[in-house]
Length: 149
Image (cartoon, rainbow, N blue to C red):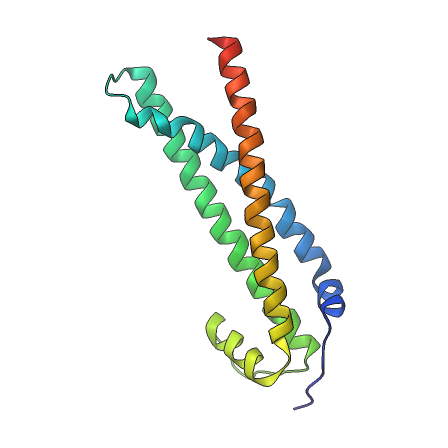
């Protein structure tokens, strides 16, 4: 097996379109998550009406969509990233491996530690973007609700 050292830049350029697609898919997820968090405080109110039940159902639906979209997006991106790492390190696998087996193989056989560090920093940055995005979306929804009611 011909091990090849890879750099972060080579990895990012190899994964470029998939990475941009992953980031683009975060925007609707943030919007659905902020919609869910906007309506879920209605659960605390003891006075129930048909309107509040509708809002809670809408919020729970938005929460389900956001969580499922995040899971699909993260798993899809991780699989593509691991495949790109295998290609960059010239690691050929005869049978398809599970996600964790692939991570273990790349960790032991190559210099994927640098790329894994990149993933950790990227995940932290994404969480920050989602937090700020939800904050701004939340303020937007509050402004709209104060204008309507």
